[in-house]
Image (cartoon, rainbow, N blue to C red; front, side, top):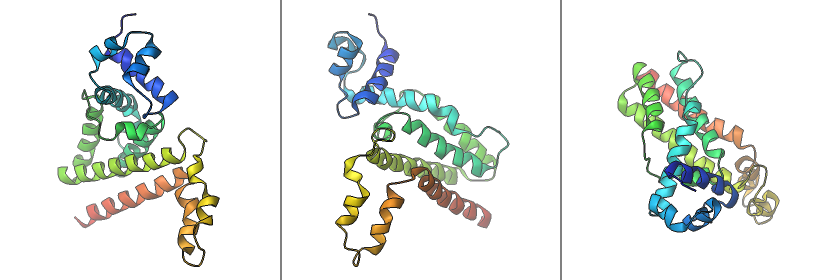
Length: 213
């Protein structure tokens, strides 16, 4: 079978969902594609190169989710859509956040959407620096948030036994750690709610700063 880079990257994402980031290898991918390992190595010299291509494909696929339905929406809606859409994009793949972290994009498809969002912010009087800091803050918040979320739930609705709240609380003396004993249900449950609360704090801070300026 004749394969190209796109086919290998798509197969890599499928395999990622099955085995996870740690077990994903070029040799295993070749076996999945029923081709010789050198064929995969001809397209990608290393796992890092493959991850870069996979990450680029994921972000390009998810780009449409990063912008609001209405072009005329307030700039705060644009940044909330960016964060929420990015989280949804990352959650679509097992270890999605870890895969994206540190990767280098191989094309500019995702960048075109970010440029569009940035232009919308600048058009509202936000400086380029403020727009970059705001969007990168939301990006980093979302990436780290989803990393933790996917550590707790490696697969949808499948909680890792390492994050058992009852077992965690059993190790914390109620007299010494009253707040931390209550934090488990906040930190490791209802991720949708906590993500929105954290994003709201970022946006409210940015909005207040914009008002003062």
